[in-house]
Structures are given as C-alpha cells and as structure tokens.
Image 1: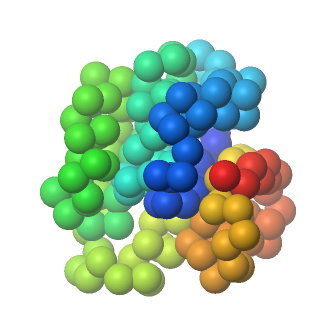
Image 2 (image 1 turned 90 degrees about the horizontal axis):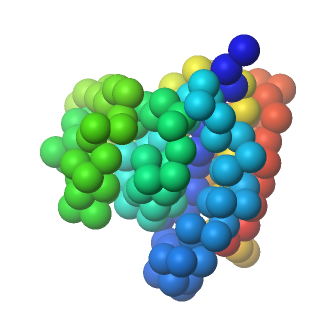
Image 3 (image 1 turned 90 degrees about the vertical axis):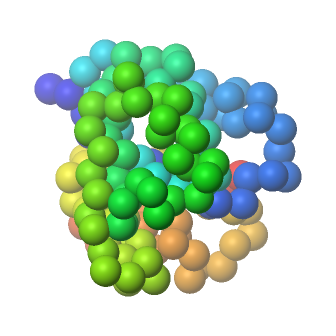
Length: 152
C-alpha cells in the first residue's frame, strides 16, 4: 500500500547551503520515497520549494503541491520551483482562499495532513511553537499520525 506523506518546514533556509539540504533530504525523505509513495508539499519558498526540487529530481514518487490561494500568489522562488518541476508534479491543488493570511495557511496545512498518513517536519531550530511548521506537526499529533521532526 503506498504511503502518503505531508512535508512541512520553515521558509527560512538561507543559513545553510543548497547541498546541505540535498544531503538532509537524501537522509530523511529518501527512505520514504518509493515509486508508489505520495508527497503533499506546500507551495511556499524555503523547505517547500527545496523539497519539491529534491523529490522531483531524485525520486519517482508522486507529488501534490498545495497552495492556499493560487500558484500566481506564491513567492517567485516557489513559482520557479513549481514551474521547473511541472512534469513531475501529479497535481497542483489551489485552495483559492479569498485572503492569504494566517487562517489560509493553516487551512492548507490541515488539508495536507488530513490527506497524509505521516508528516515530516523541518522546523527552524530554536523556533517557537507558534510557527506554521510547529502547528502543522501539532495537528498531525492530534490526528495521531506519525511525525518525523528534523530541525534545520
């Protein structure tokens, strides 16, 4: 039976080189990235875009990108990653929130968790528990879903 995994993580990724993240994803996403695995990824910059690029380039897993509004409303870095990987993305889910504020991002995160069997979270090391990543991980915990938490 294929495994469905939601990926969540910080948007603040400039404190490490790109190769650091590729090594990180090889270690922590690689073991779950079978040909029949399915990943749900938010369409933001940071971990979302970096993990999308890694999964598209290193696996045959299916990938859904979930955005709270539309792809055109995402940061340029995220739009570029989605564009570069469009031939590997199974589906782009635009939740079409009327306002891109905190509730829309929380709804996107719950959407991904609710459709996954597991969550892999990459929170910013030392961040507080009010971050979107931590709230997504907490939603998974309340839903009694396994979580792998890898601070970056």
